[in-house]
Image (tube, rainbow, N blue to C red):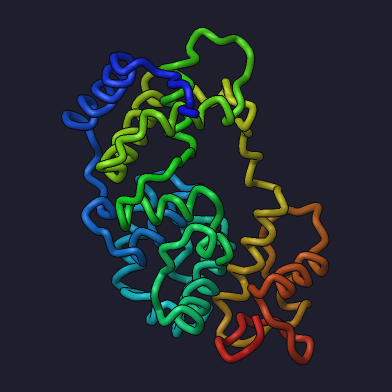
Length: 285
């Protein structure tokens, strides 16, 4: 039985034309839009997860100069990977990229799988990132939803709704309006139109039940974690707990010893002979 259409052909065409006309005249020229290299797409998508485009562009270019391939990333010391990541925040993304590169080199012949389910088994790659890699690297027509895409559909189809809206109401519309012959272009256009909406009309995502405001970094546990990693990362020798305490230059209400233990468990740091350092590749992460 054929599924009932949510959009008439006229409404679908009008929507697509609105998005594509904006993209034609005002689309952003972003470096990752000039490649279909799956590794390059992976790097851009992970960097863009929680960071603004303007901050990502120079780091993306710098990263690919330093680690031009999965193999070069996999073989690099974690210390170098974390240093290269600095300035983007959320260090776990760098750690996950390093782990993912090593898994892909060791178990997948240095290739990024074209299977979404397989991609989602890799560290830090979830529903959206797995789909975006396949869409932008291989032009695979998949349903994708992230903050800018969500903004477009909320603004265009639900502007008069007062109550909050769940993604399950948006997904059928995303699927039905998808330009299957060129999803890479379509999603790029949607993201740019979503960014345009946010800059000119405010954050449409506030109408979503999935909307969350980011807590302040200053004074947070995230700040302490980042600070501890920074201290150990830039030390030329392993540090004792007492030395680490001396280098702490932020006010924190969180337990430093417990945070160090957590960072060790996650694979960011290594404790040996009561001293902390960044682990080498041949040591357990």
